[in-house]
Image 1 (cartoon, one colour):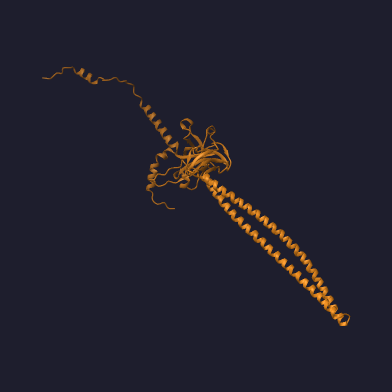
Image 2: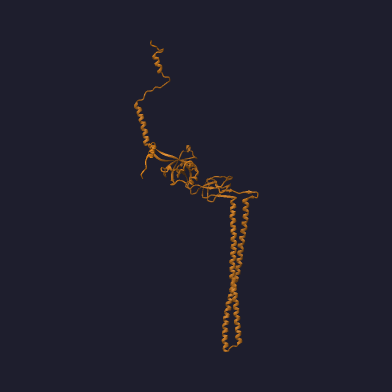
Amino acid sequence: MEKRSLFRQEAIDNFKTRWLGQALLIGRYPAWIIVLITFAFISVLLFVIIFCDYTRRINVQGEVTSLPRAVNVFSPSQGFISHSWKQAGERVKKGDYLYQIDVARVTHSGNVSENSLRATQQQTDIIKGIILKLEENKEVTLSQMTQQLAQYESAYRHAKELVESAKKGMIDMKSTMDNYAEYKRRGLINSDQMTNQRYLYYQQQSVYQNLNSQMIQQGLQITSLKGDMLTRATDFDNQISQRRYELSDLQRRLAEMDATGTLFVSAPVDGKVESMSVTQGQMTNIGDSLAQIVPAESQGYFLVLWLPDSSIPYVKVGDNINVRYEAFPFEKFGQFAGKILSISSVPASPQELSSYSNSPQTQQTRAAQPFYKAIVDISHDRRLSSLTLTTGMKAQAMVFMEKRPLYQWMLSPFYDIHSSLMGPIDG
């Protein structure tokens, strides 16, 4: 006997095909429309991949600087700023005072530097008085000896005249005595007259010898006096030189003592004060930065970038770059234009990198990477004329490198595989 269901078969089929939810039924698109849309999409994609290109770019760190660079002024000693003469933005000349640093020490007896300066200054005054007195004594002594020498020379000239006169008289007496000898031989005079004439001749000869001895003695006195004058002048000069040496040593000690009390920090070059790092009353240590001065011959502000060695083959002088300054957020100010002026031919040394505040920091866990210094001209962007740039301002630059079609970038992994599978290259 056939078993019959409780419900009709039509009701059961209707229940199975009934929707449990709501659905929107639309008509089917024709196949040719779907094929056309797919072909158009693939065509556009192939066109973009083949004919469009992309430029690889990197972000590098840098900072604003002036050419020539700003001169840093450092503290020569530990102390506190007792006075400040200049403000940022002011013009200065070489030698103008910037700061006064008080480095003095105070004990129970008072300020050590001031007491030492006072005592040394007194010694200096005493030495100066001694030198002045020695110079006066030298002048008086040499003046007296010069007068004495003049008297000796005058007496010597007078004695010389007397000697010449006595010599002439002696010659005349000799001639007369010879005549008397001839007269006696002829019998014109007697022996007493001849003897008397000889006595007169020898008397005149004795007078001549005495005068000549006096003249020689006076000449020796003149020579001796000249030697004494030279000796005394040398003695005075030696004493004065010794005192001046002592004075020079005291003045050196005075300068050193003065430096232990108060130091003046002056501008090393002509230019404009870029920044004053400390204020009056602030403590400083040896080597602390006190100020930055932009030299007067500065050509303006430039950007210093540090390019990795992997970018050097693709970056050249004259390339344009985009610059972002940390002081001027790009969300508000946007990016600024720059143009590369120069690229160093050798990597920057660690000493050069350390002299910049925003230079790349090499990690200790990897090998040091070489960086090349690039100078960028940022003066062409007019928006910077309304903004204030300062030395050391940090910046980030987008440097554009090689330009390739998109399909080459997509196939670059296969290029790497091909390069790794190649054998030796014959040169």
